[in-house]
Image 1: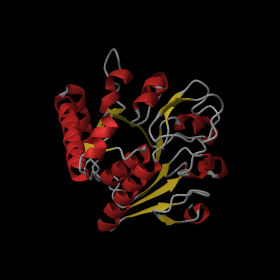
Image 2 (image 1 turned 45 degrees about the horizontal axis):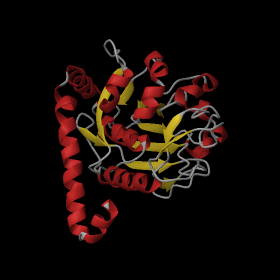
Image 3 (image 1 turned 90 degrees about the horizontal axis):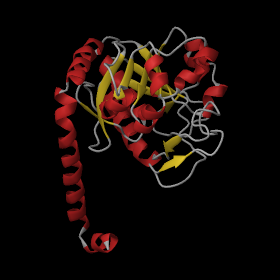
Image 4 (image 1 turned 90 degrees about the vertical axis):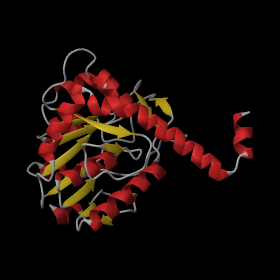
Length: 271
């Protein structure tokens, strides 16, 4: 019945209805994400990151299998963004990333103890704050971001609302811009998954993970959401345009990466 109704309505009306629904969803999230004491504290501490790294470069490390073919330890003295379960590689690399970012609720819920144990600047979606700290206060390393699934935009100010763009990599690009980085370089953003199915559908891993740098990244029994590469490309194009308008740049040095939005560079030439 629902599909029948949708098929009888004109497309402009459907788009308007979807826009109103998305706006209502964001409106419901806004009070807590603006006035809760934990968020107020995060907003205040985020101010200290604004343009702190003006003129510097950073590497944004995706978690694709190509990281196994990348000499990541050479980035020990660079500014680096890590995402989700990147900490699984810290021991092998001999260093931890400068920052860690995770916004997916399923990842935060299942990796709560690991995230709590990390002592580095950490950025999490406000949406999952209760999953991350169900009892007690957040630690001094934690910063909460007001990220949303809807309302496409590239946020130049990380203290306000940030669109997730179907990938935490897009959130990292927005943070890098806010922090003032002149150049952001992508590594390990393979933009290709062997897992197939409807975008954003929640699935349970049945064995070793072939789509990330470690077999146990989303190992057996881990719940995760299938990628939405088309939506992520919308965000990547927004990021490219925002950086270029500001006289900055995003480069892609992923070994064998299939993303075609950013200028390609060879990792060896950059380091």
